Length: 331
Image 1 (cartoon, rainbow, N blue to C red):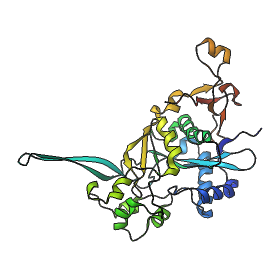
Image 2 (cartoon, rainbow, N blue to C red):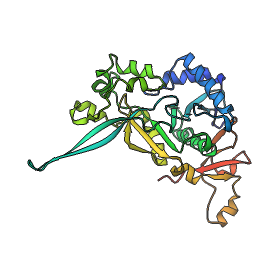
Image 3 (tube, rainbow, N blue to C red):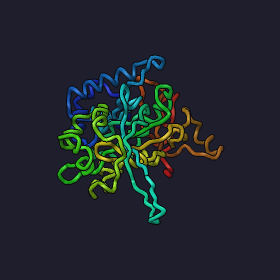
Image 4 (cartoon, rainbow, N blue to C red):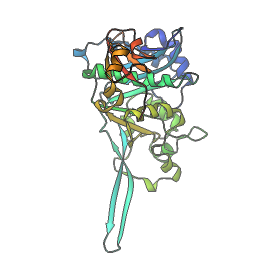
């Protein structure tokens, strides 16, 4: 029986990653069907896993793959240790401005977007992709296992964790938000801007955009409706992180207006519920008032040889040391 497992990506995964990148939806800038870009990403990931704890710099980028056990891949996910490393990580922050006139007896509350880099330095979750034919439950493994990796090697990461999600596009692949905001300062279409960024820092875009607040009521209605709205391709990973405790209301992406989620590592559900392996026997657990006979995500404690699996019970874990976290019940 072949059981999918999450593991560190290797250069040998390039052909499968290229296949997945070609099938991936819009907005996944760190997963593009570019052999040169992906080869560099794989080597950078291999170096990141190999770097000792005392030698990390913050530029490490980790890439995990979901191995189907038969020579193929079902998905991938990643971590950038420090968002905006070497520059700044930009987003728009939702704010509200209140103005009033006693003489006119008028009081207004206006929605504004403030360009900010206050997420710089947070750990960034990246590159989530799950084959459409794969079981949705494997998305839990893809997304949450990397949180267990961060938890186990916390000294390599920030306490704050963020994740960007693709925003709404129209039937022609155009972004209403980009057309109303970014395109006014850059003579290019959304697809060109997204390809230009392609996993790189957005600082060069932000440097040419207005630093003063954008008043949302002045934007076209289509752009207003797109603010904080999620592209359908991002629904599964968004729901997983939302259940973990991530908040997606405060920040949006500067390109397409999609939600940028944030959370504190210690507050995440998987981190709070994680328990060490080996777990007690089912009989001992029942005597203590708990139960191991439920599905879980389990992982080992290795850095370079990190591996995680979706298991029917915690007692089925193949490692003597590691962590496990239950899949159910969900909040």
